[in-house]
Length: 117
Length: 112
Image 1 (cartoon, rainbow over the protein chains, first blue to last red):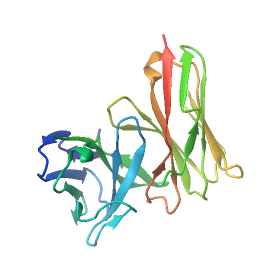
Image 2: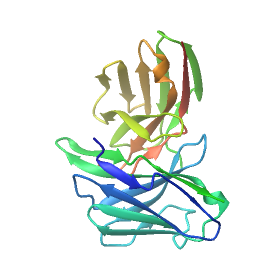
Image 3: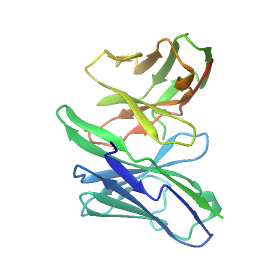
Image 4: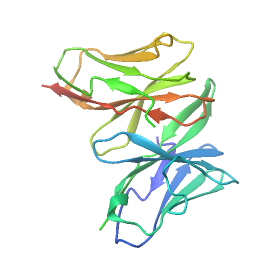
């Protein structure tokens, strides 16, 4: 079964509003989670690294004031797209590394499709 | 920035044929992973190969890694129409719990 969930799976919002996306690790704790964005017919681009108990680390070119990340617990990270614009419409995917006997394995959420009208 | 570069970018084959996809990267890595993504869906993890491994098998999948050439290949044998999807390689540079850097992806079409 799924080990990382995302909610919602899809959302439609109007320009100027804010949208919050949740990423949960279901059966393990994750001090770090990753947020990716994928535009149609393109690859996944890392947006930021979410760190439990501290500030997120953003990739170059990603506006931290627009994409707010909160990692308030060891099983939950949230991404809030503030003042959304149509160009923010994309597929947002989170991942979390789960400890395994061999080290870590990254588990991806099913993704959230955001459409801004 | 994109670390992995897959080759070819699009591949169309007949059902039953083998599909070979290549990935090159630029930096030292901890491991390299291959993922599949059906159109508009989430990622499916296929296989992980560590930097000290040269080859791994999983069912109809065979992955090789050549760290001296900074390249990897994914072979799907006896392809099926259901294998039609986009395939991505992704590298982990730091610790095994670090971020993944994805390549641009390969679109595989398997004709029935």
